[in-house]
Image (tube, rainbow, N blue to C red; front, side, top):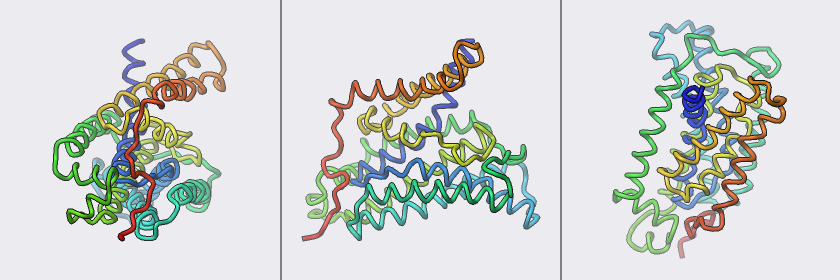
Length: 296
């Protein structure tokens, strides 16, 4: 039973980890994106919808292993498009990053609910066909490898120095020839695509269903995990796994009949809040995060 819970914890941690990595990249460059919840919703819808359209509407034939890849690619492109808009508003227009992130969440909540109804003609629930499903263990391995790669890039490479400089001291970065707004924009595009991929993981690998509330607050948990990890991709793995463990534990308690569903599903969120509350005073965000950079 313990082995099963630990394995389930790993699978539950994947979307939190991917979204956290995306947010860490963005905030290290100086951009806040609280629209992770919306990006995950859009990714969860766009992946299955895209492959469904190709397969059933256009009659495209692909080998079965390629369908999940196509779904993830579609989700990533949608995330990049949304990230491009948010990044442009946050950098070149020097707009309010919080308002832009809230707008993403509100737009996604309505768009996903409408999209499911408009495309499939069902009210808020669509099962993903077997041929479009991905292996969650493969995605777990990808997420862990990505965390290691991002840690190396941020803390052991010249590119990482440039990204962190844009989030810590953009004036100095600009003075040595770095295009701060361009770096921030690109980081936002890449980071947003990771959040969308996290949503696609939920719909085509972990839950195998598209619903209008599929993210279930995971985007906000990822934001909390960024603080817990102190903007470090390696520590984000631990934070995501902690949430995944309590998530898996809540399902086990429900199956064992220990408590009602409404009670057990509160456990991972309460545990996350308590853990983050214990470290939030010691966490230090990048000094220029959330502050638009204007050339003098």
